Length: 268
Image (cartoon, rainbow, N blue to C red; front, side, top):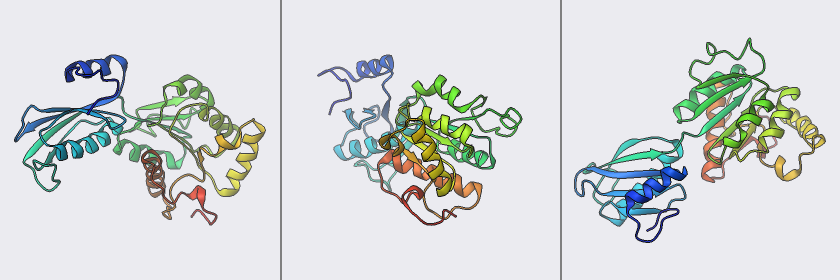
């Protein structure tokens, strides 16, 4: 097996150094308990790998799990059987992720925001809350956020948008055209893997017209998940946050799930 950007026959340590030097996300899996102690497997974000932990099935299972940890920017120890069996603990594998955690940028310091911050942190996101209203955008209101920024959403995105990639998410919760339309226009200019916007179907239909007037085409409009979240009957801020994060995960993993955007009934 080969790693992303690997040159034929290059030692695993050289491949790791190359990945770190060029900023490519990789996970290094090392057997720390049981047979094959010290064996290593280097996993790239596209699922390719180099090295072996001693058995092809163990390599396959650990590659799958390492990708999950890498997507979240987490480092952990997992246990398996000698051939990757999930119910056994013979082999301990230390999975070390070399990447920045995915970013969740939340626009709007509203009632739903606190719950979304908490759920986002559980999932391993670096969470930023941004709102132009200084009285609402305070660390005291969102103590679990990594950043609380007082700025207009579109201006903040012009500053950080180039940093966002397929693992990152933007959630526009402002529910106010003077904030959310410019924010969405800027969001659509980024490579963020998820862009969602809060509001009813009627609100979003009005928003779409405003976005069209701003020059946004059909293909770009198709990137916006609105109404935001999966159709799980969410009512409370906490349930809504879970619905949103579940949709983010589904979009990232390519799974087809019941998004509110794709239905036509009431959203509550």
